[in-house]
Image (cartoon, rainbow, N blue to C red; front, side, top):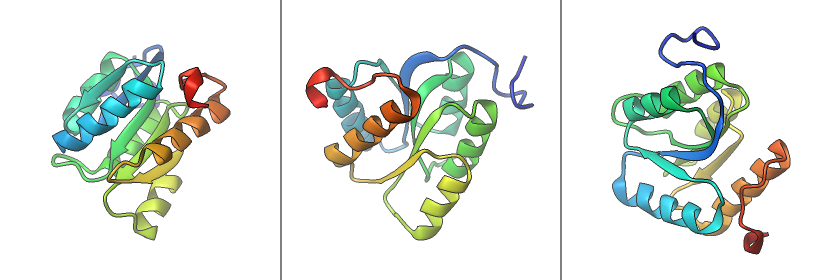
Length: 145
């Protein structure tokens, strides 16, 4: 049975993990490597919207890093879909272009944070610290606080 009325996303229990959705392999690998160093959560990756939908259908992550520009669907459309499915999922929108419009649309559609590419470790850590404050769930390794 689906939650939020979306038949494409199954209701499931949060697994304490992170999903990266980015079509650029080097960006995905850079962020994935950083997250694996500083977090205690497992990291999964998706190259496009379809893979992201399947990943969330399999298991809703606690935290998603979602690129705005994907080849098969807008990241903002996915943001709305994932937020409707589970408003408690912490979603960080990422983009190479930080226009006020992108930031505003992301916030209005449920994003918890917005960071620019290329990924700067401190900005990623700040978004993880925000996740901890907002959810009460530890994600950073103790050495990163």
